Amino acid sequence: MAKTELTLKLEEQIHSKTNSKGMKSEFGLFEVTIGFNDGRPGYERIDYLTYDTKGIWRCYEIKVSLSDFRSKAKKSFVGHYNYFVLTQDLYDLVKEEVPNHIGVYIGSNCVKRAKRQELAVDEEVLKEAFIRAGARDADKLYRCNSPMLLLDAERKMKKFEKQKQIAHQELRVLEHKLRKRFGMKWEEELELEEME
Picture 1 (spheres, rainbow, N blue to C red):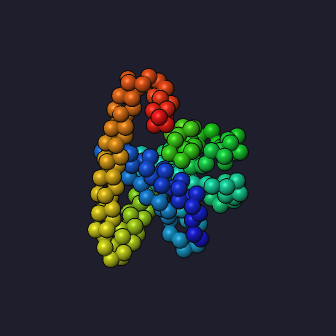
Picture 2 (picture 1 turned 90 degrees about the horizontal axis):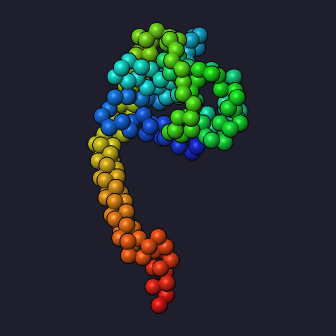
Picture 3 (picture 1 turned 90 degrees about the vertical axis):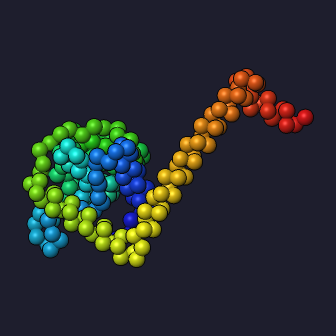
């Protein structure tokens, strides 16, 4: 089933949050299968799973609708810390239904902290699942016929982000100069000056 635009947006936000620490210390993968998808009991799929350099596993269940949240589908909360990733509107509806030990992210903002738990499956099972998901994603990248495209896109994004930061700093300097010259109502003063 194709993912909705909202699901993709929440995925991007939680991925961004777990990858924003400067030095890479947390590693995440989407759609990590615990067990094998051969119909045996114990098969589960974690929407987003992260593992950090301190050996902490975090599981994220992404839910975009009330029916999705309340569905009978298994919620794969097997990590040390487990979270729902929701929209604000959905969280407002289900706030009282979220178990005490489960955390909540609204996009990339943590609004409810998770409580640490023991792993619900053996750590070796999680590591094997993580390796399989990573290999699957690497294979997809390789088969796109140009793995360098992704690296090039990342370089361009970093360049644009730096340009954005520089432009933002220049804007702040300009606003400061305008306030100094025209006072707090510099925008109104500028409009009047342009009308003359």
